[in-house]
Image (cartoon, rainbow, N blue to C red; front, side, top):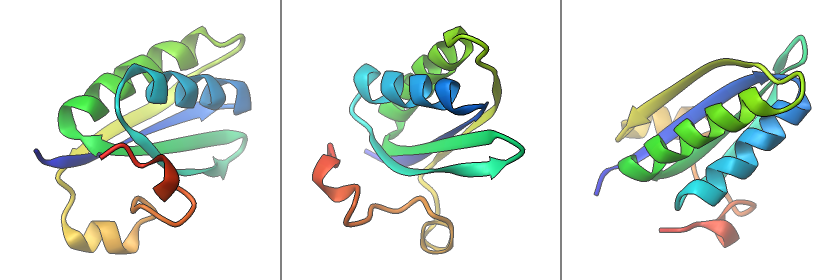
Length: 103
């Protein structure tokens, strides 16, 4: 099955926390990146099989919007990202994420 990466950007920490929690509980994905975008915007990226990432992003969007004061700014899924994208952007599995890898 092809691997994918899914990213959700939120306004504020509670929304990104709710989104990340929902994503890993909704399907078999691994958080590979979390960070501050700018101006209080946070983002979280997950990896997994394409169908699992789609399900995770849907759950993350819903949870992020339901968090008190939560707002999902944007989201995106890249099915089967090319090696160049995986190498340059922070979406690859790392030593930190490896213990939680689901596939």
